Image (cartoon, rainbow, N blue to C red; front, side, top):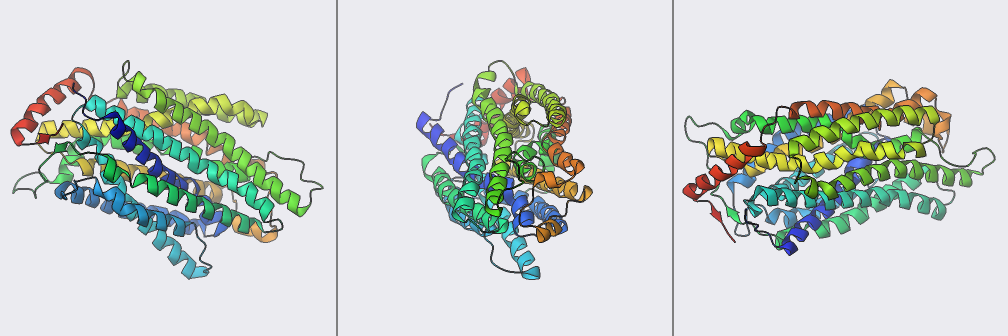
Length: 495
């Protein structure tokens, strides 16, 4: 089939994704640790905040999808949102990691308001941005490659967000000699959010000016009497629901990023013997250990994820999306279990590196392929019903991603509570807490968050994909017949 997207535009779309993921990963990787270890918010409050915010997202995300599908501006249907939302997202990201100096109820209200508002504004950019791939080209193979490179450079943004606090922490510990752990952690996250927001949103906003919507589809009209509703079409689209189910069950893949800092703080200590160290030296040693353990885990995740994203365009020539998900998830499950067994028995995190890299390969595959499978599912829905709800389909993916991060946060908090790891009382007794101060059960609980939980999650998420059938000849037939349907309906494909 004909390719439509010039290389310059191809790169511009992918680079914008890097900026978006830089900000998103800043939030998703560290918000739990910031809320609990810095602001000292109640674990129950954080748990309920994440759950209730997702209930609102179940309304907000589809609503945003329907708004995008039903309205076209003079600048395009999807394009304007990146520029419009960039500054608000950046501002609320900084506010999310800024300690306003409030206490008790005021602090809880502030944190909840900022978190929910951030999620709503982010949805306003995320849904149209990833929907845009549907209208940039009618070629599903080219669309798949576009999404692949977008998610790949998004992985670079994730890597930068991962490195920033790990580099800033030890620097602040030296510059702020004698300062409390809380002050250092607070500064570390604030400067991370500030840098990520300024750089990330500046890059992301360029998507409004560097991309082109080539498929001009008439605005979605209000349903006629007796016609299926938009939401009904979405829920009755079996392939899309299978992809959504896979996304929900694969929530454990976020653990390698979100829980790494918790393992670094309470799972492993990799530093000099704390006995005999001065308070300042101990503070520096603890920050260095947290950074080292977190870096090892997240570097393995980045290598496995980014590596798989890079080779995916070449693997598409031999494997379809269904095969890629199933094969890599089963391999990731085995590698995760081996990481847990080997790592805990040897108490040596370095030995786990090869296993953690292999276990992280499905992260990249799912991050990319799930978006491409959503697009193919929307092709199927349009082919079957004559309707295509691009933004609403992407809203499903946006909701699944946020739900996955929330489930990750909830599970981390539940694990804290299950092993009686009370951060508030710990820090009230000492300014510096070592992982070696905790019980082995507590250490193992933290370690299991980046081993057992992701492994089981990967095994479960492969199950629904066994029933996904938009592959091979069926996929080719849908593309051929869909082109004829679009021509009759008046959809325009620009050069």
